[in-house]
Amino acid sequence: MGYRVAVVGATGNVGREMLNILDERQFPVDEIVALASRRSLGSEISFGDKTLKSKDLDTFDFTGWDIALFAVGSEATKKYAPAAAKAGCVVIDNSSLYRYDQDVPLIVPEVNPEAVHGYSKKNIIANPNCSTAQMVVALKPLHDRAKIKRVVVSTYQSVSGAGKEGIDELWDQTKSIYNPTDDKPASKFTKQIAFNVIPHIDVFLEDGSTKEEWKMVAETKKIVDSSIKVTATCVRVPVFVGHAEAINIEFEDHLDEAEARDILREAPGLMVIDKREDGGYVTPVECVGDFATFISRIRQDSTIDNGLNLWCVSDNLRKGAALNAVQIAELLGREVLKKG
Image (cartoon, rainbow, N blue to C red; front, side, top):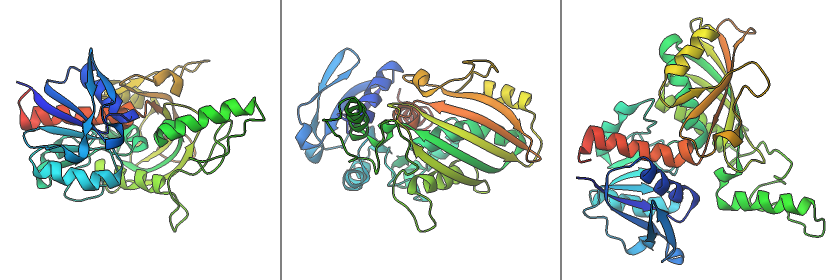
């Protein structure tokens, strides 16, 4: 016996990826529906060897459906998620709307699977920010061994994190560089993204940080340990898919780089590729389409007593969004619903 699953926002990048991953991982689906806004009504979306036609989210009745994977913005989520939850369908939400709600668990299954039991307060589970998700998968096994005091992270985030408009803008601007008569000014981003990097993701806050940077701080504390201090600089780079992060970690206890490498190799969800030679590391282009979060460049930081540096790369449309949501659904099925 399987589940009745609704994918909300099925015509978008993340929604399509959710459908792909549900099929790839052979999630036990008895019935599946693709939901989207009225303007996308009837759009065709692939689910394995099947073709689904999107249905109208506005008129859909979630009664009798087990799980709804939401891949729409916060405004639409605010309108439709409570209705789905009230109808008895467990919502797994990819937006930022519920991440900081004390009554909604924020889950990365490799890190805090036990939190899934808190879903029942609102019948909603939150999926973390893409940049946070891959980082905490790497931090958790190291924290269990040596207790992390402080994290300094700089991100190199692909344009797909800004949706289809971000992808289109990079593509159009790149072409226009070679065709000066076809000027493509910045629209989705605040400055030219082609052949450039932009140290600005989301809105600025009063302290000078951006909302994206604040999310990494708040979410790491909620998912891993509230005592960990985090400071982040989040940068948009001209890469289509795949986020990279340079992470500096300060521990309470000494952790040798060789032991850290062994710990990360054994940890769930991670793959270590760390050779000190040309090409002995993973870049965003190489991680696209993969389930793993890749770790490279593991080395001691000699400027502090108990420091370590590492390079972390992951497909942001997968582990940063769709894959993590499906993994939450799998966890929910194993630990709570127990139908599949």
